[in-house]
Length: 138
Length: 138
DNA sequence: CCCTTATTGAAAATAATTTTCAATAAGGAT
DNA sequence: ATCCTTATTGAAAATTATTTTCAATAAGGG
Image (cartoon, rainbow over all chains, first blue to last red):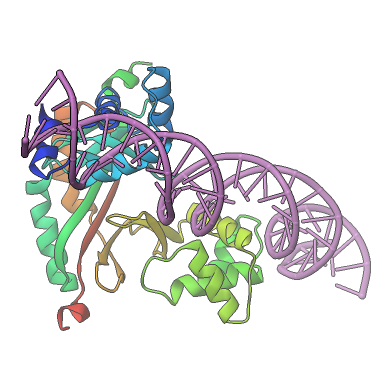
């Protein structure tokens, strides 16, 4: 399993709570909160301590298996993510988040900003909002 | 004054606390927290209630005079913003945030994602991270 | 200068997140 | 399969962030 090997490579253990958090994230297409993960684990009869949810999210983020997503007004939620894919488009109706790849299209912009500001640019946060195909027929 | 007229147009009042919050935001080039604004107001001898700081930030955001910025790990801070400019590049050394305009450069990307995902895209969040010119000589 | 009403701020309620530490469980070694 | 080491968990408490409530205050038009 994906998670198993990533953890082992770092001398970390694949535990029940870590498995459950990852499963819940993967079975949910919208960004979700620690609270939501906690409640879902209860409903599934595999209750995890809320503290552990926080810790596990931190870990999964560090491993690049999960990413934080920012809402328009209220702040972040978490989604599982393919390594290397850094962007999401989020539906403002149902909340579903879909990954997309944006690196190439950004290079013109990045070069321009580099020239204009003389910053060294070493990271970016790009996120789109809109309405997904399903919610358009409603 | 800028703030004065924007407020009056909506039947809102220019109060001492609102002036102070705006001044603090404008005198700080990095994104700052409500707490920071609160403490700074104390230091300046123009103390504002923390609750009022929160309310004023909400208001200034609604008026598009202030914008929320997301850090890499820890979450948001607030910066004053020119109306219509929607992006910032943030220095990861000193925290300074500089505005830039990115709308045109994004249109290719947006069109591509539109075709790929069939989302209607009606908003985006773009933020760059890097090192500012000053911090490069250090 | 008065009056109306938007706005403030103190206190308390609520929610979010982090810290601490003893008990537990993963998984390599035997 | 069982033992042993040590990473990991979870309960409780501490800390921090944010929102709500409501009486007192102050902006600014009349």
